Image 1 (cartoon, helix red, strand yellow):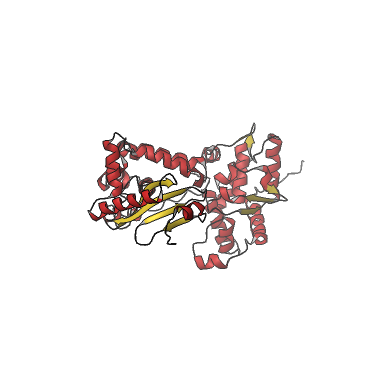
Image 2 (cartoon, rainbow, N blue to C red):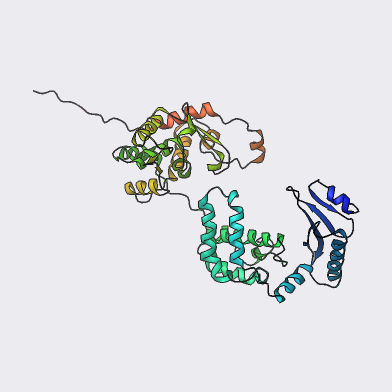
Length: 398
């Protein structure tokens, strides 16, 4: 709302948000924590910019007006007030902000948004390997499109998926730098209308590589081989196959998540960020009982000496049986089995796999999770996967 900005009004103002004096560009910003700041908003080279003028009441109403007027004069002269302030600071000996220092701060600040610590580590490792050698020691303001291309071009055609992730991470970091007025020039890592005019589209370079899946008609024999392995990984892998779950959902699963034959996976551990309920069959419950007996005091479903399985434990076991296999591929085997050998609906299979509904209209109308129907589906899958007893013919003795 537009106001006159008297000291008394501002001192008593508690409504959070920006309050502005119409036509001047001067804003009074009340944060949710009650702190109050002066901000001058202006447009430069077609871009909206904010210049912080200090906190209230340390900076008075009259001082804020004068600072805003000085900034407006610079804009009228064709100068960017934020850039001018940075030049002044550098002239006074202030060090420019280096990219890798700001990136580290950004990652630390955003950690709570990441699904797990592994995600944060991936941000740090990819930037360290691919970006820092080129732009790590450069100050944020001086990085241009050509520098971003130096980062991306060597890996764009050969490591396309990694390169696209690096580009996206760079874009977010530069966007944050602009928001904090540490950078005034356009974001050099933006894809649409910018880098897409230079670099080939990722989908034109690589086809999607699906996880190697065991044909569904060989899953029973595979599980039979698991039964000969006396290890927690074998129990966890069979559990993963029979529940059509993902590796991360299983290795971090906790015992308190299983109640009355239902495993409830919290949203934080689901790829789609939505809580998922899994009906557990008698064989799956038997597996859990065996795993508990092996490590009674653990909080995890599958563990050794209270420690959860590593991310590679089940994969290494699968590859020891057949080198080309992946754990994720068993989800594909489950999906193929549903389509080719059962009358269960595709929708039910997708729900069991906890896949996101891409069609927004369909997603809006779907309310339930088809739990009882999925219980029947998973019971059928467990029965199909169960190793069959050998047909033995006994000969009568003479």
